[in-house]
Image (cartoon, rainbow, N blue to C red; front, side):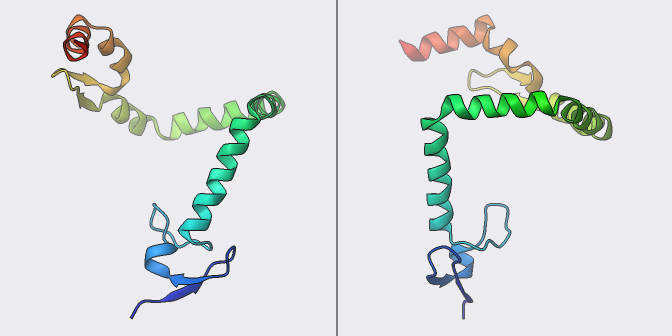
Length: 122
């Protein structure tokens, strides 16, 4: 028998396994339908108020630039190997080439990739 839970937003009672588990596998307080609606509202607000959101982000960065830079530098020091492995990750492109993740832009400018793009656009 499945467990039931009440959503804290819409107050409906739904199955936990189908409605209250996030993508990361954690249990949430709201059902997936309410979370989707909530996220959609946030997305709509950001689209309607792009300038306001951008200026608030800029203001936050200017006020907290030192602490942000310290946090980034600490992360880089603590996760040096992890970052190195991520950059060296090999990716197979649809054009047939294999490249490192850190050189995707460089690969996309190569003659081989451009030739492949031209062949699919014809």
